[in-house]
Image 1 (spheres, one colour):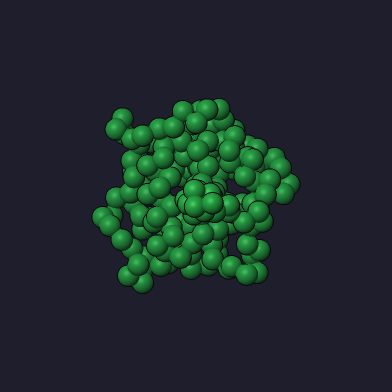
Image 2 (image 1 turned 60 degrees about the horizontal axis):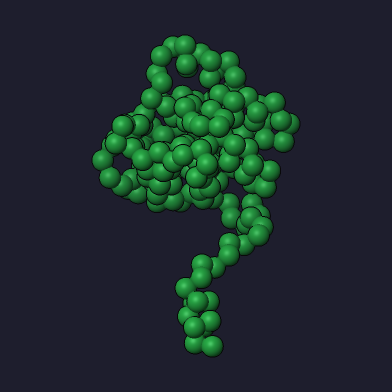
Length: 178
């Protein structure tokens, strides 16, 4: 009995099966899609410190699956990811009537005009370079969701240096299958 009780005590609690309805939680709901676990975690912490709810996906396939059950107010999307890249995710979102309205901010180390033009042609709303500036990201979110979701930084809630996570060789990347 004691062993089972200890095992139950150590077992992680299951997350609620249904997402919190928007009327019960009016915080800006952001989906962060990036294959770098470091970028996901740093961005998630920044957004949560600024009063937002966050859901993360490690690549485009995970993002599309999450969109079946969740409708974020905005998506932050990397370009280069395994299985399904950011262009494919953005194209999917823009072609599906249900999530079509979701603003997309592409955050990438790809800063050439060719990459930016392709993203804009697909329907990406804003394009940021990695490493992003926290204030710039928060301002982009605030302007695209039409509330003060990006204004928290102006109220003294911005933490850390002005720079955000980058996309360096030292960054930890997950494998497509894990």
